[in-house]
Length: 387
Image (tube, rainbow, N blue to C red; front, side):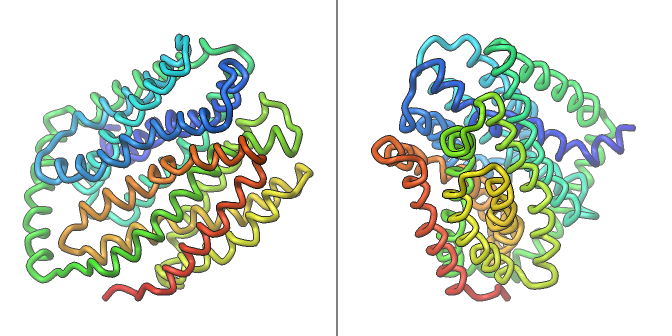
């Protein structure tokens, strides 16, 4: 039983952590209704959540490369989920901002060490294991809004269910990864990994120029991901005239598509190549997001969501691999950028899109995604396949 849990533990923990990350965007209509927030203030909640993670995750990835800190995993997802639960007792906008920031600290603690756990315990099938890990996160983003939707039925106190999930996750981690057998296995894996890493580093080179260009593609994808995650529920309410209680289901549908399309993007990159998959994603995204923003019926809304989600999520795996290949001598740092900033960086831009929505309207504000997607596409054509 422990062997099975160790195999599927990292994606399960990733799912648990991203319950909290995914739920926060689904709670935006709840904050607007209960605290009288405008779009700028609502997007600033996501900003606080992501600003810490954006800065901390590369640094914590550097720390995790050099020292084993396995306790980062249960502490990380516990801090994330308990912070979301504590929103139930928030009495002010400033308190929500503080809890959102604390949830970002938890996510920053979790991701680097969790990715290294995959490497340490499943190095014999690293590609498949990392694929499962990524899909676990996408599943968390999909299920988080569905779970958070309970506040529209049962009220804010329902959020304490996230603390119960965190507790179950901690118990699962202690059972599977704190035994003597695991420690022996991990130590053996660490020894083999260090020897293998030394051989690779002796011949590897870094292509910083290409990675610098890739950073613009990473930033573009992150902005698309974060802004859409915030405004899909709002667009569903304001344009489709849907109920606030069902808006979280729209976000769940988007992230559920993302879980499948993330896996499809990885498989497609094996056939087409990493850069071609990134380029294809951007090419499909640009026309589909225009339809998505301006369609006024629910069938067109969800129909356009499919190719738009492909454009966003299919790039996730290929960009991660490209980063590791361009910085072959510093793959851990590259992963901190692609896995960390690739998700959180867009949250830094979201308040400005929210400010545009306050001045004009949501549809006009979301038009800013078009030039962002164009920049990502152009930079991907400027890149070359890594050697």
